[in-house]
Image (cartoon, rainbow, N blue to C red):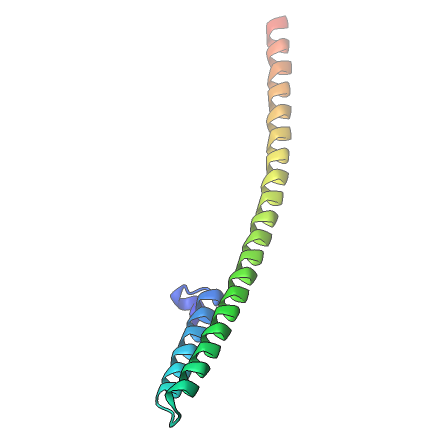
Length: 103
């Protein structure tokens, strides 16, 4: 379903994490505990969300770097092929030009 809307898996995962954090925060706020206990739990939750989001960002960054690396390799390979084809065409044109000038 996310492919139909154009959402990346990272966006879906981030939305899931944010939704979970919001839900957990609201549950803690409305729980029948004292203020100090609730603040302590919220602080722990915030730290957990921060750590998870940092891990997610690092994971996405690594994947993007991998994709760019593969793309760069493919680009260089195709560039080499095209350069060789261009050079071969240029040499063939020079040979044919030489044949025409000899006549």
